Length: 275
Image 1 (cartoon, rainbow, N blue to C red):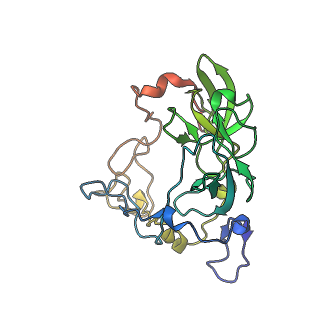
Image 2 (cartoon, rainbow, N blue to C red; image 1 turned 180 degrees about the horizontal axis):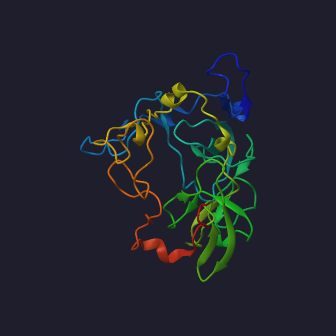
Image 3 (cartoon, helix red, strand yellow; image 1 turned 60 degrees about the vertical axis):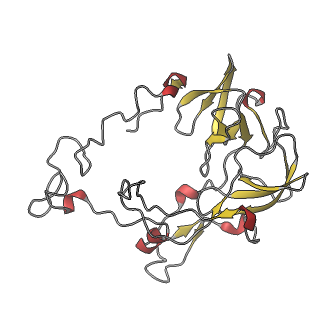
């Protein structure tokens, strides 16, 4: 982490990730694209997620979550990605093509990486789950074979391989939930990079606006017509038995997972409750 001297009120509390490990080269132009900014709106233009909008201009990096099989590659650069919390790595394959992949922790420029059914147990390599030893840490895990990695992709995330049984691999997820995943899917070895991301202190309101986060008004500061917590003279207690959204929906003490979700039977052990 990088700290700053309190030369101004905006610098006093700010901390950022140390980006000195990243390459200074510009991103690959053919792997950049512009995404439409929706600012929390749905296809009808209605706001479905409040407090979003604005933010700095940015370009999306086309990250390959599948990677080429049996084609060795070499890491050219480690780069920042404005659309995700983890760092990304630019890989040049032996056939001359290039692609961006999620950069695991301790991956270095010049390192060789490969995706194969069975590969050396080294950071950055990718192989079938059934061939990964018990106790290994993995990321970018496929739920369905050939679909590309979907689990454990954010900064510092990893899943732990607990067992292999009857065509399934038991994984302990970042939430401590234990679930089954088909063992013919691919997973990358190691923990996702930028594990210090959760230690970042925003420090000032303006930095939140750079990130596209708009101000949030407390319900208790609103009028009764606008929120269940609104109204009253001065500071008032909540006045309702359970915490609620501005639309009166219960937000605490209620399970939100769909009881008929297709993957429920794959959960061996639910994540521990937060106290």
